[in-house]
Image (cartoon, rainbow, N blue to C red):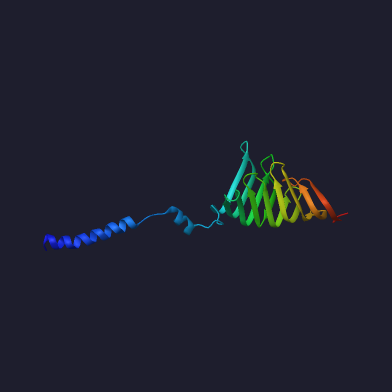
Length: 185
């Protein structure tokens, strides 16, 4: 094969390859539009587990099946398919446990909202608070709701609309009590 014949084949191949290489452009904005949706979380974690400490001592421990973090419109972390929060006493033992099927932390304020099959259990006094939604105001260190509440302990059942307590669930106030039933004389 002569050089002229070889160049006749080589020139179209080189033109094709040059066109091929220069036609490849990665437009990141276009790729982002195709691969993301504005309602999707920025981060997703499975089997989430975090411990919050104060001066080296555990104060709160959070477990969740799925945790999703969103940065827009405000920074939120949502816990789906189950949430468990252990509140630690000063001696390092778990004093109360909060469980629900859904939870949400406002990362700006640190406030937590839990919904759906909510239970707060004081392990020492063996009493349980049940409701559909609880709000935990981290700065005021209080847990409250304006929904129907039932508190069960070994000797009584209390019910009402709206309640306030502490994370340790060592005291409680009803906004509108509806019943108090003593189980033992």
